[in-house]
Length: 601
Image (cartoon, rainbow, N blue to C red; front, top):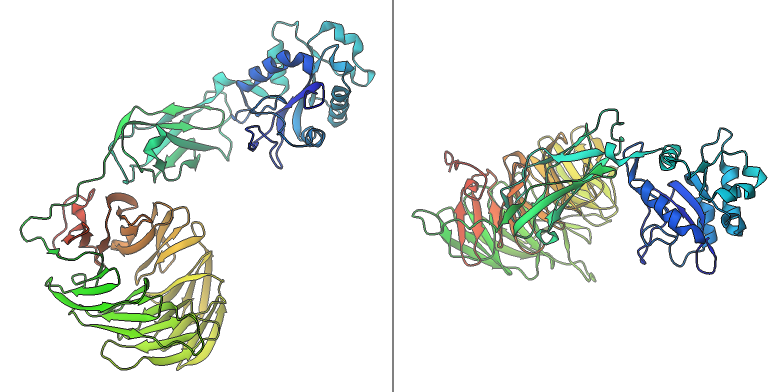
């Protein structure tokens, strides 16, 4: 075996072998090699020729065989590992062992060990050990113990075909061929492409794709930065990519589809255009506010609150400036009532605002000796009274009309989420428990999960979004339904009265209603947050980590702005900033929406 300090070489094949830092392939955990080729160092050229010939074949399932070659940089024994231990694991995990019989082979102790191990693994019916006689003179040296196993001599004209059949491979000419059902085009940076469908054509007499087959997409050149779900499982010989987008423009880009054991496919070149131009600001009658910062619509869908740094200002439905208030720290929580909005910062200051321009800032008292006064939750009741729950456990009640904050209750485990119900409050603690309070007294309790991200009333239910599960509580009957998240571990949420939007760490998102039915699925950049939703989730505004905002229509990004955007709850207006002013337009003017809907404007 040819390794450091030894004089023979061994090759084998495996499934899904991971690559080490040195660029070589290690055997897959729990997997099997397709073929293990045992040979002496002097026979490396013959072994490499066999390796290359078999590598051009496919397995019975249509996949590419994984062939291990000891001195190969792509399929050799990993550097720095115990080669003997490596082989002791690889041999039992191999489907077939091909031994290259030569006179030198039988002089190598390591080759003899490999041959005897392969013999012990060979079942009574045979087929696992495949001797290949590459030197006719070696026939006399074959040990008695394996002499009864027929070998394949390379003097036969079609010996490679015999080996191929013996190890269960077939020629690559019968591989599944991929094709794009339609050519891609019309791409714009940041916008979601129309669904891309890749179909596999299976030749007659060839087995169908295995149940776990998948297709992977990439882009050429890589500078176009293709994002989305780039590996999709095959369903009925078809893979559909529904959330692709490019993060960079390019004069020419191609999509490339690939899958193990398949002929790849490439689209014709197409351009990826620069982002859309912003809407026209100077058309007559178009509202443009002289304000900068993050806009937030009031529940009426007309007035705006604008947060510029730590200054919150109100702009009425008539586009007149109203009151202002200062936050002390960065904003942490936002909440909407029937008429009002509220924002709480990290210091415990809460600002309430009315669409007519009135504002009020309240500093919630900290518990004696407390180092932090961080709000954990903010929620309105039906009378537009706001409740603020702190990590320290105190829940305060305050109104826009004045008066000192009123301490409502102390929740011993701190507050992560809360909401108001008809006769009290539901409080989710830092311990993951949910408690119902009536008149300040604790009642029914439920165990949820440690990380609770949001809670909201949705129709007759209360939805609690956890990192791993969605919890739906019927406050009247006390029934709790818990289901796993439809996507990954949740990192951002947008609770609402009709539906809730959630996004996981990979940028996958969904909008679902009180029945936990998914209305819309979408894909965005990792780290994005939903900040507004309307029209049953068919319209969304997402905030990206770089500060840009995107309008998502029916699950597809159709407009991206470098500056903040806001969406009214009725879906009729979008507030778009250019960094100096804020323009209010119908969402249909921001790409992909068709004629503007003005009937309710």
